[in-house]
Image (cartoon, one colour):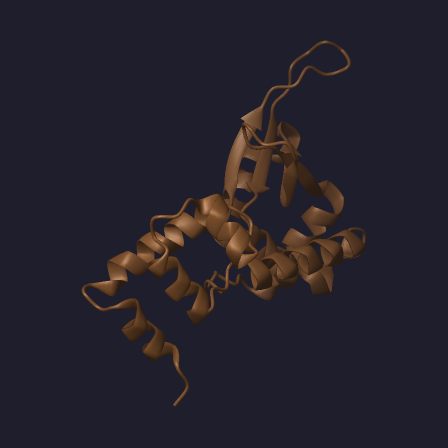
Length: 188
């Protein structure tokens, strides 16, 4: 897992309070063009208005945690006036996982949702990003096959990750045969 910044305990507690009060742990539906089924991911947002100095606060959260992005929107209120809403958005799977696991001891209101999110992300991290030595050898030996065929044979989803994994293996190969790479993985 990547290494992330861990702020001091006071900042972690403050962030957890903001998340409990002004934040959202949401399931964001995503749909890729040309696909039938919809997928999704968990995201974390903290929203602040102008009255709470939302611009500075959301940028401070982004810079302190070194996660996510900030944005501003101008929704129309009930009176017809526009007002600024500032957002700190964390959407990358591992970043959401880090933020929620770090804030978990301090969460109260959104604790169950955070636990559900962490459990979901943990299953995705464990099953989708770990490649075995046998899979690496298979990818190198079947380089010319379409990603959908490879995915079916490896019992994985046909994602861009398999293409990126093949490319990285080819770059690291540098003249070695796939059998020699497989020997590097064998236990001593």
